[in-house]
Image 1 (tube, rainbow, N blue to C red):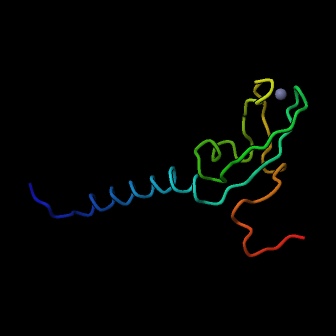
Image 2 (tube, rainbow, N blue to C red):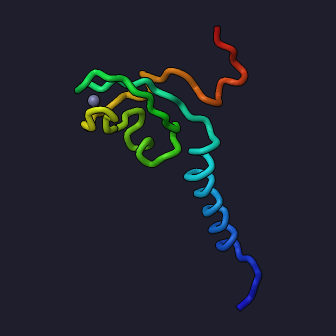
Image 3 (cartoon, helix red, strand yellow):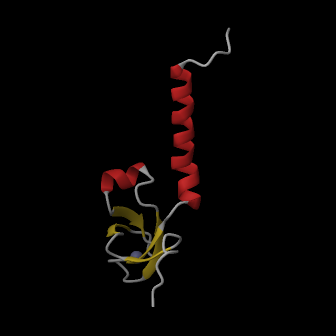
Length: 97
Ligand SMILES: [Zn+2]
């Protein structure tokens, strides 16, 4: 057993670090958005926090999410991009009136 690092081991370590950043660091510390969604069933509105492009579901579904309403617990498809209300951390350079 040798301790020399071959290119494949370095690549695997790089992929592992990339996955950790993608699934643990970005969702917590990366930019995320808040959408104000209105349930089509009970007409109550609620806020939904989401991270653009950080989850596999968002890559497949683009800007649509199937969510359970916190009030009536029925599943509905929401367009989270169209209902986006503000950015949590990505608006440091811009000041909105
Ligand atoms: Zn509802």
